[in-house]
Image 1 (tube, rainbow, N blue to C red):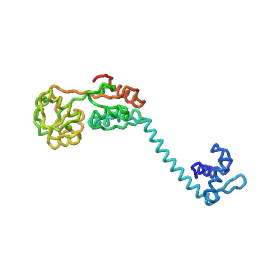
Image 2 (cartoon, rainbow, N blue to C red):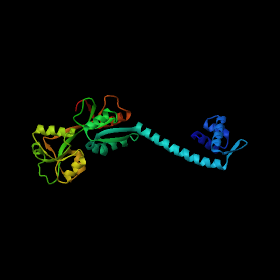
Image 3 (cartoon, helix red, strand yellow):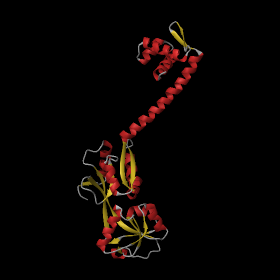
Image 4 (cartoon, rainbow, N blue to C red):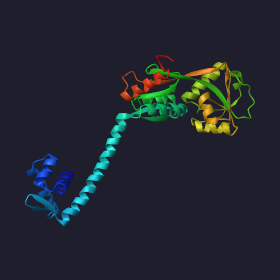
Length: 295
């Protein structure tokens, strides 16, 4: 039994004659007749009653037709899943970013982009580190990456914005605003896991400033950082706009003196990006994004 035979049987039931069914299916009437006789032989009974040019259904034929319609409807639904998956592949855009920048990407940039280009859906992939973002872009798993500086030389970059790095502290922490960098020395802080790329960057910055904060929380999970601030355990470094959106009035956000700004950029490989990625880049460029080889 084949789906084609079931389609042939339904066509005969709908059109009432072999000739009309064959014409609707764009097949030879002889081929249609042979397929239906083979179906009857396999099922061991007559499905059709031939009366002159008209064709009716036996009781078994009516039952088979009902079941055949259910089968073909189910097959059609399964095929729709495949078509939807293909449409998502063709019309979807995957952007990798860190957990920190995902807040801005999913909360502001992506909704605005999808509102302007409803035919393209964006899948945001959250990575543990910038290195993971770079690898996702290099391997082709993601068309674009949203990261902060510094950036590798083998990826093309498009500057999106500059974020101010600030100190986020519990309200009980008495510190000036703006705060001299020297006051980080001995300050209790939540920091990335020792040995991670982000922690190494922080350690290098602290060394250049001749300060040594005390790590009270060491994890790459920003949720634990946030919890440590809310619980009064320590402070954390974050971007001002993201920190204000997450903490509100539950923590104190302080600038540094002198202030520290870090560029945020979209990156992709040197090869031509796909249509969806180009559309996203064009959208971002209209918002003031500029390309740079070194940020």
